Length: 258
Image (cartoon, rainbow, N blue to C red):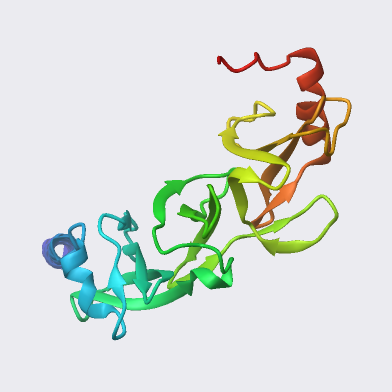
């Protein structure tokens, strides 16, 4: 009887190890297939696209501004933003990678006239980062029609959507975040990007210089506006703007060399 019992236990152990081996093989096979799928997926990921690869995506009449394409190295949804023009009007286009088509497709467009009708179709694009968020933001710089100045604004990519960033002004108004760099009526404006409050992230600093006594204040005609990225937009910061403006009294800029 004991011999039969031992044989029965041995048989159970054999069955257990057999089932365990089958299960382990299944897991290993599934892992190998998954890894293979990952490698295949990576092989299908797009290389950086050039203008010739994207030109066919645009509606009739639109062309790509040479050298303007900026890639987002996004593992989930790779994308490219590039500047466009048609009949003297500028624009931006977002192309996303379609894994089924194994090609880019046009996902979103922005007309520069939506920001300001003075913007010329010669924009330069650069990727920037504000604050702690993961927002994919581009800085766009374009000449202003009939002015010795440039307009600087920002676009935000959210998946397949491209939109113009907004700003909250010192009076609380909400508008497209457009800043002027260059000559303005009765003065000039300079736009810089610097970490004003020491938090490790840049703010947008707009410094205005008055000419001929217009808009004179305690800083001698120089005032500064500081904008921080907050809540998905650039918001005017009263305290930082006040501090930057008052610093002109304590640390005046040296006169320009003649």
